[in-house]
Image (cartoon, rainbow, N blue to C red; front, side, top):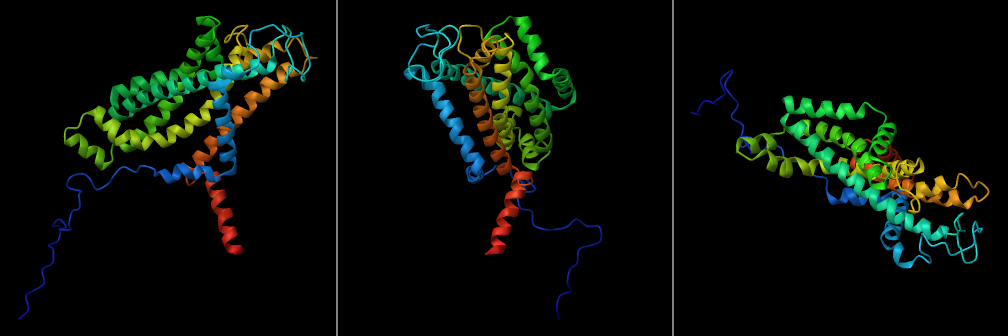
Length: 321
């Protein structure tokens, strides 16, 4: 006689095996694999942007070693057209435009990178703390963020730079002040979703400190979106610093800075090379970092426009085969 089959009583809890859920570990943090980063290089524009950006970064950190003239030296004829001894011509003071253009990269690009890193760190800390703790902490920090974001970015940067006094470093401070809120907003939105994940809740139940939970459990999962935003923001930082210098609120003569060089070209329209070459330098650097940022975004977000278009092209090629 066979034993009667046992069925769970109505309303009784299910006896399904538990695989880590009891410990609060049924979900693990999703960290993007390295292959996703390498995938950005599959985009032609991403490769072009990376190459151009790398060239400019190398120039920015080595130009002082090989430029033919000192950027402030007045050794050549005034307003000499490009060619001959002065490859890109000379300015109204007899300074070599090529040497000043390359030296300008050593000023603009490192400061833009430092600006973005500082804004990224400040915004990440503010957003992570606000999203993780919530409550009155979140309320205070987000109202501060909203206050900064309520003003037009360029106008607020101009006001701060003018208040601090015309100086390249004061322009950097002004740019940092207006740049960090976007990182805080992005970080907070991601942390709000992650803090309720089981692996984060389990860590808190086990007594893990908030600092360790943020650094170990949450931070690795927000690096991808923040890196994409930072890459795109480098071009914006260069434009902002150059714009402040153009308005006389940033680099001051005789400092070789691209925005300041364009400003100096206004009174000499006949000498077209004074403004064209610094403008082209800004254009190429900004486009390079934007291409890189777009490629990274398409790699990190499979639902982005670029990623969807790339999958459709691949599907069409496969169908043709």
